Image (tube, protein in one colour):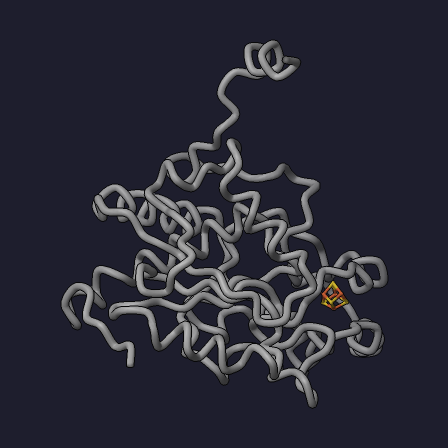
Length: 269
Ligand code: SF4
């Protein structure tokens, strides 16, 4: 029973996020940021050419990174470290696809304010939310991170967040994968079977835009053309804390939708 002395030694390992800020430390590669350090157009162009997913755009004003396409390979950081840097911030999810393009205002004060607002919203909600996860053509990495959400470190049940096998019981649809042709119909049917109000999360760059594969004969280049996405969680794969931040953003949308549609109206055929 080695876990008994280990448990006594480690004590409580469960995170207090979002009540208190938390994360993985400064060395963690959660996202790429773009600094305003002086550079040349040639340097930016060659960094953009090296990007395997075309996530870097260069304009007369400088370079930008589309986190919806960035797979965190690190090539740009290696080539041009004074401009492109890894950031360890976990709060990179957004309600709008366009907000995933950086540079963006990402000061610590506004991130802290967002976290505190989400923490109070979770307290005020006073009900559980149920997530239905659908793998719409993932490589499996996103699922490892999602599975970690239920371990003792993240323990999402402490926030009233539960995974359900039935779309009839789900408030939030959590979708991973690039929207493969074979999963298009099952995904739509899952969405249709969920009662209103409902919120859809695209988790990971594959779900947002197709990742390295993009659009093709077997891929829809993301799930946005199949179901209406409300929350975008970047990352390849997104870390458990980033997933949790995205889920909290989704929970944040529910009260307004409940007020608009009323609780639990069935839409299923
Ligand atoms: S880290 Fe992201 S932006 Fe940079 S080269 Fe890789 S995929 Fe492109």
